[in-house]
Image (cartoon, rainbow, N blue to C red; front, side, top):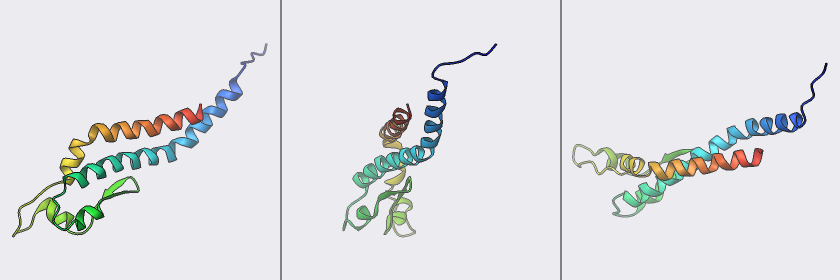
Length: 112
């Protein structure tokens, strides 16, 4: 006796599409979360010349900052810390999570 399941081939194809989409979808999700954090960091950084603010960006799913960012964040022996990156992460957790979840939903919707 043979059992035939209608739609199994479609289900298998959609599952393959979902699996194939998860890797780039995960990268898109990380990038979206990083962009939310970078936006908040730019809003929080102390502006003197604007040079440090201009270096804050999301790149490869990470937040990067150049210029005097490290010195501002951690301080030096002659300057107290004026953290903005760590507070940006803390303050944008909800937005970053929502952005990442939205990207993953798009991947799932495309696959299904």
